[in-house]
Image 1 (cartoon, helix red, strand yellow):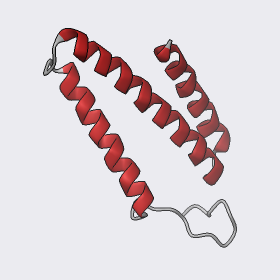
Image 2 (tube, one colour; image 1 turned 90 degrees about the vertical axis):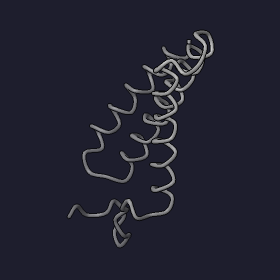
Image 3 (tube, rainbow, N blue to C red; image 1 turned 120 degrees about the vertical axis):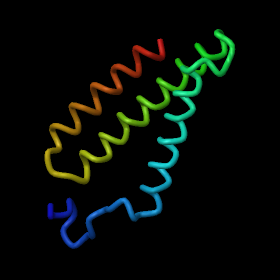
Image 4 (cartoon, rainbow, N blue to C red; image 1 turned 30 degrees about the horizontal axis):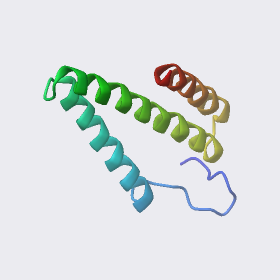
Length: 94
């Protein structure tokens, strides 16, 4: 079991209510993106939803990586991954 980032602090698990809610929100947004991509909406609406959800989900993923970098081992990996995802999200938003 990896040691917690802060000495004496308990390791975070998926049982934490905040993590469960974040995971549920991510799953819901991803499912909505799949529905939008599957053609459930008119073409302009689907394109707008697809672009918006891809941007929101990528920002969410990038921030999650940066938060994880603060609390875990392998900080450099999580920081570089998060920064890369956020750069992609910036390009997606433009």
